[in-house]
Image (cartoon, rainbow over all chains, first blue to last red; front, side, top):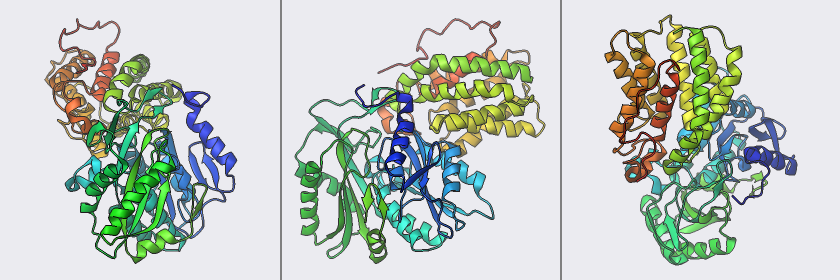
Length: 330
Length: 218
């Protein structure tokens, strides 16, 4: 293992300490594995909570911030957060107007948030839940509820966060989060793996000249493995999978996120974005506020993902609303 | 089963989980994220620390162990282990005894709870299938049978019975072809747990030669 760390077992806690030391105006630790906004819950505002394994910065915890999330339950690298931390995050986000838990569709995350919700829900605390399942490679359209949550989560965080910041109630924030989660579709491609600090093992094995198309952010298997293709060919194949599932016609707007899985540089992301923009333009579809960069990573994995989310006026307004965290400012 | 026996069983279980960690990590690394051994080691560590403060009742011990596992890890298996122990504690808090007749019912209750929590069904090649095989074997066992050994043998037989089937739940379902012809890591964990429950004076029978219950990498 060749990673910059102290003890593998301290990887997450050392990272959290550094994050809070770097951005004390944004982040505080409500407990060792609960990251919350500095200043505490905003009274009268719907709280938005997420959680998941570490190793994906800025997902999940990085998006705690103004117009985004209020708290995050933090698990070990690629492991779900503990029930106690899900409870702690919900409590840290509770400003008296209810709390929405908004997270990726993974078994451990789901179980722990469900158990936390069962323990906390009462007449005095309403809790709603939305899971993001945007990875088209992980199940067929007929089994959409089995799909994994990947970079589309970022757009759902943004839409729900803006809705809550505008003062809407829990029902409305939940409706918007669900709408955003259901609207987005993503697909990824991986070139090289990352190493999990606690085990020292690579997340998957792959030959030098090979790529895995459709691979998940923890190294879950994709749709095919084969020789590397050109950026344009990869972009075309990604769009061929995403576009048939999306109601996009000429004149429509779409949010576009070209996301590095960690090690792929901005240059290559823009090479892919170039082709995506060409194909969308040929269909008369207009990209709105394109995002190109590291938004949902898998530590040092090489590869990228493409996320599309058709925008109506409501989603466009919410994505364009002010937001501020150290990793993303609108 | 009384509290002293359960206390001792938890200590043997903790030692077994720590010893099995490398094997379980390796098995899990082929189909999942390779942290099953780490998860169970953390659960074992927490259970060992929590036991001295546990209430002197069977449900109290089970609740304490459940909380210790929940505090140890948010990984799926740790969460399910905590859920299973908690559901067993709640079932016994209804005043039911832990005896031969009750154990299959208790196990089926736990299986129902875990299925609802985790989303897997019987036949999916998960730890639920190992628990189901144990429940059935205990139900069939004669009154004087050593139940820990019955459970151990049933878990081992379940591994053989499911060895060639694909996994249909959890992360391993995405490796359907690869998951056939190898043991499910969660089922191996249950088998290792049942081995530890057999008191030392009840020696294990000779191991079945084939297929070996540990990893059968294709």
